[in-house]
Structure formats: structure tokens, C-alpha cells
Amino acid sequence: MLYARALETPKKSVDVWYWQTREVGESVRGAAEALLNDTEKARQKRLQLPSAKDEFCLSRYMLRTCLSTYCDVAATEWRFKDNVYGKPEISYPSLSEPLAFNLSHTLHGIALAVSSIDEVGIDLEHTERRASILEIAERFYSTREYNEIGMLPRDDGRRRFFEYWTLRESYVKARGLGAALLFAHLAFHIDRGGHVCLAPNPALNDDVSGWHFQLMSPEKRHVMALALRAKGRQPIVTTRHFNP
Image (cartoon, rainbow, N blue to C red; front, side):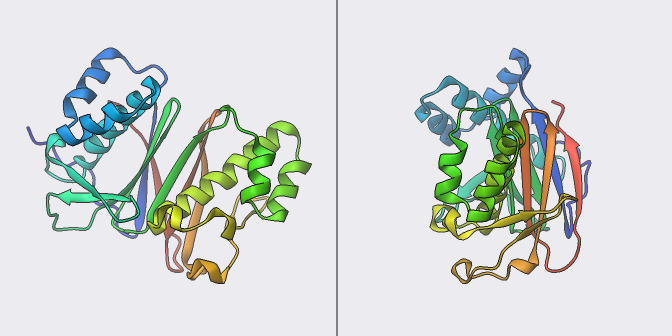
């Protein structure tokens, strides 16, 4: 069965899909399991925690289903491969128009960025998970970021910690460099209007002025960040809620 093409490929822009998975029914979970190929089933089996297995399965279901809204390709037909740093990309089928994606999942939530621009990254984090935020911030964040988190009221500081974390993850994922690009080289600033900028650093080997960052909060417990190499233009970001 082919899915009818419903959306145009985002050109010089990005579609951000979000799925709140707290109350997903068994019928949807069954449909998600049925879409996994042998490679994905083997990868899921290697995961230890039941929650991780569930997140992986649902995220692949969302990825396959959403990609099929841009192309006349059955959800079962998509094949993916990882680059040398682990960034996933489409390996089959060969498409007439470029289509890039980036996927993130956390407790009760999945986020997907789809664009024709290859350098796109997204990260979603659950803000109520256990984390020693000041210890982590002291190790990976700039002095200014660390001090800012410590000066804010507890809940605000915790949220700012996850905003800086998702920004780091989204940028690293967009670059496709994985752990090779250390978080310690990154320093972000969020102004009162929510505008985000990344401080230049020769260690990044990158013109940071060409990046667009956007923070989103699809629900109270989730913080999401998008990174896109926009090269001076303001990209159009469209948020879509996934409804299986």
C-alpha cells in the first residue's frame, strides 16, 4: 500500500513533528511493531529497558509514517543507514528531491525534524527526569551558563539547564559529528525574547553565524530544540502534531 503524498518537501524550511506518547493504545503499538524491519527488531531486542524498547519502536513508526506523507513510498519500504558518527539518513529509496530528517525521543514524547536541508538536528528532553543539573552544567557548560542556572529559581534553573542541553544536542546532531564534537566547546545565549545565539569558537571549525536555533515547549514536561544551518535567511518552521 502506498501512502498518498499529502505534504510538499520543506524547501529552505523545516517541518517539526511532535508526538505525545503518554497514552498510546495497544492497537497503535501493534501497528508500530509490524512496521519494524529485521534490522530494527534486532536493535530493539538489544535495548535493556522496556521503556527504551517502546520509545524506539514508536519513534520508528512515526518516522516511517511521516516520511511517507512527503513521498509516494510505503512506510514499510524505507531503509536507513548511519554515517560514521551515527547520524541516520535515508538509504532507500533514491529520491528525486533531497529529504533529510532527524529524530529524538524521550519519556512520553517523540520529535522529528524533516527538511530538504541536510544539516538539521532536533532534540527532545523530559525535564522531570533525574539529573544533577549543577554537576552536569559545571562539567559541560560555560561559566556564564552555569552561573545563570544557579542564579535562577529552582524550577526556572532546571528548565534553563534542559534548554541549553537540547540546544547542544540539536547542534551536534545537525553537524553529524556525534561525540566527536565536545559539548564543552559550545556556549549559548538566550535573550529575553527567546532568541538563541551560539558563541564562536575556533574549536568548532564552523561559521556559527549561519545557524538558526529555535526552542519549543510542546508540553509542560518537554523541552525541544531545533538547529538548522540557515545561511543568513530566516527559515520557516512549521510545527505539526503527529496523530496516528
